[in-house]
Image (cartoon, rainbow, N blue to C red; front, side, top):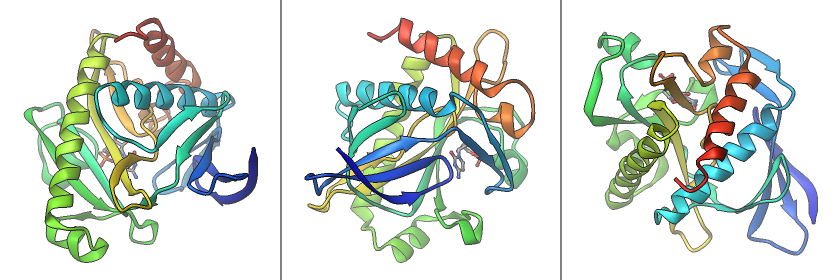
Length: 239
Ligand code: C5P
């Protein structure tokens, strides 16, 4: 079924599918990178865990009416997805202040936002993915005002559903990043991945970090932490 390797990114490979022009296979790799690729390490089993977690989340969001590129998981490390043209905007949703936000604006670490903050970053490695406003996003990507509103609304809606899901497994959803893409008919759907690589997750009771920050800041073993998240999710399949 899998044919040519089309693209290899930091965390995933993209393959074409024999006989299916509008579909792709995403293969999750064991590589972890941070600080725009400056820090790199291979964690055996990470690709499998991110594929399982991301597939579970896309499936859950589909049940909540969120359209995405996800079709089905194909193996431990592979997903079948619809081909999209990725819109070069990284949409970050924040429920609790940490990370780049506290550094950039001096907001107190741990401050809770009752109205989640939605931020747009220009997905461009050469520029270090800079923060941008709506006007920048419209100018750079050609996206319309209405489409941008749709993306932000989807991001808030996804945040709500994910917060509920994570609460059930004793985890706070601190912040996360989403990407959206266009299907060939021009419609916009959620794309890329949603995994502990792209979210900050803090254990409710202990505050323990359960996401890629354990690798960024050399806190704990990444695979053990991701496996804990996956085991809790799996036990709550019908969330
Ligand atoms: O670094 P910052 O605090 O802006 O990250 C906010 C959230 O977006 C974090 O959950 C982080 O993992 C995610 N993110 C990402 N990919 C990026 C930038 C941020 O997944 N390129």
